[in-house]
Image 1 (cartoon, rainbow, N blue to C red):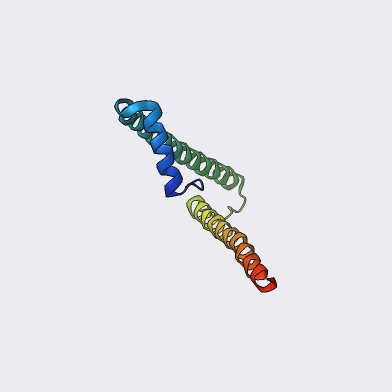
Image 2: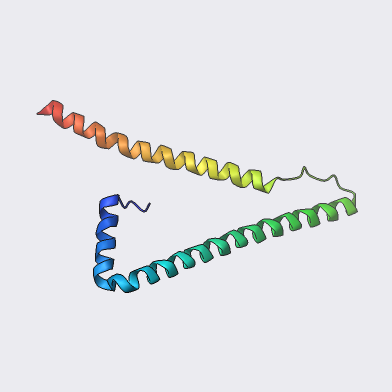
Length: 115
């Protein structure tokens, strides 16, 4: 979560409690939660609308080509393409994390051997 561990999160919460006070902190946390939920809803709605528009455009293009007598291309499954892209991105992100962690541990072994 943003590279913030539990100790850092506790320090942030303690500072927020000191600055905001115990009366305002629950109200601010509640409004922050509502704002994040609204953002997620808007994001999901945007993604759903975008997928629907792409699907409508594909259907319109296919109908125009069929009207001209051209062979229709195979139907695209946008949801499957998006899922495959997300899985590919997750694998790349995980591989990048492993690659970043490997030199750090390798460097420690090198220092121990040279000492």
